[in-house]
Length: 499
Image 1 (cartoon, helix red, strand yellow):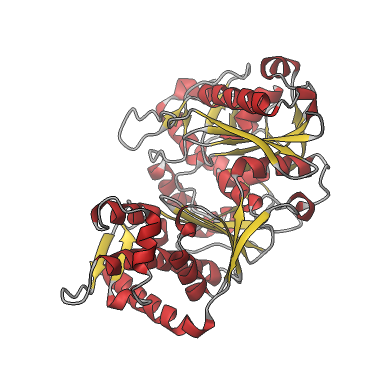
Image 2 (spheres, helix red, strand yellow):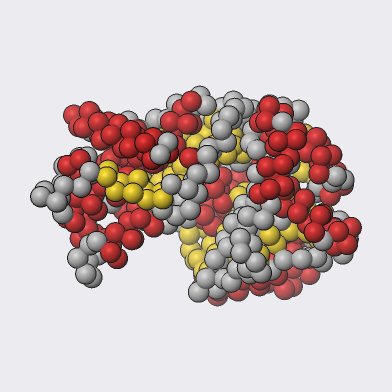
C-alpha cells in the first residue's frame, strides 16, 4: 500500500489504541489496541492511582506494530502523527528524560486537600477569574503532593508533563506541551494569557519545570532517528497534534464552535460544550479548559460536565431488575410500552460516588414514587434511563447559565446512545438536535495531525468524511410531557440534596 496516511494514538488508562487513516479518503484502514485486557492501575494506598509511563510506550509500540502489519502501510507513507491522551496525569522526568516515578493519573484523589487549600488561601475570585476552575485535584496539585512527600525526588525533576507530552517525547526526544494541556493541569492563566505564575509561586514551583509551549495544530516535533528505528517509522515524520481525551473526543465529532456539544454515555457520562468567551461556574460544578482551537486572540473553551452514574445504572438494572439473560435491546423494547415520565416513578441516578455537578455531594441512587399496584420492571428500567438523561440536562443548565446556547449535540453511536428512548428523551428535554456519528478518539487524533501538518486546510475538510448515522430532532408535540417529567425529577433531586 502506498499513499498518504495519518497515524493517531489514543493513550487511555485501560489501553493504548493506534489507528491509521488514509488522508485522501478519510477512511480508517487499520486499528489496534493493547493490552487486550485492561492495563493495570497501581493503587499503593486507598484513593491512589498510578501507572508506569513506560507501559504506555510499550503498548503504543505493540498497537503500531499491529496496524502496520494489518494494513501493509510502510513507515515512509505515514505523513503525520497525532496523540490523544488521558487528561490530568503527572509525568516527571529528569534532565536525561528518565521518568522519576510512576505517573499519578486522573482518578488518583490524593491531591484533593492541596487543591482545596490553594483555593482557600489564594481565594476563589483569583482562582476562578484566572484559572476558570478551582485548582482541585488537577496536575498542579498532584505536583504539590510530590513536592511535600517526596522532596528528594522533586529536586531531580527537570520537566513535568501530561501523558500525551510523554508519548511525544518518546517519539521525538523533544519535550513540549500545549496551552490546552496546561489548562487541564490548572497551569494556564486565562486572564493574562500566560502560564499561571501566581499558582506556581503559591506552590513553590519554578517556572522552568513547565515545558515549552507549542500550538495544538502545528509541527510540534519530529520523529527521532532512535524512535524511527524502534518503530519502523521514518525519521523526521511530524508530530502535529495533541489533546486530552475529552477535547479530542469533541474534535473527533467535529465540535469546534460555540454552542456545539459532544457527549458520551458509557459507564459514566460526559457532556462537553464549546463556549466562545471566558467564563466559569462559581460553584465549580463543571470544569473549563482551553479547547483544541483556543488561541490567545480567540476564546474557545471546552466546558466539561461529568456524571459518574450513567451507563453503570443501566447495567445495574439489567443485572438486578430486568428478566434473566435479557439484552439491552430487549430492555429498550420493554421500556417503550411505558409512557414518558414512567407513570410517576423518578430515579436519582447518582450511585457511583460523589458527583461534581452536585458540588461533590454523595447522595446515592434512590427510587421514588413506586406504586405496587401499577408499576413493574419496565417502569423501573425506563425511569432509570430517564433519570440518566435528566442528570445530563441538569448539568447542561449550569452550562447555559455560563452563557452557552445549546442547540446541537454530537455523539458517537455507542453505549447509552444506542437506546432510542435515551436519545428521544435527551432531545425532548433539551430541545437540541442530536447527531450520531461513527467515530473514535484515535481516528480523531490522526485527522487532527492532518490539520496540524497542513494536509487538511481546516476542520471542515478534515471531517468532511465523518459518517453521520442518524439525526434525532426534538418531538415538539411531546415536549411538555418530557419537561413535566424533568420538573418532577428536579424537585425530587433538590429534596434529596437538602435532606
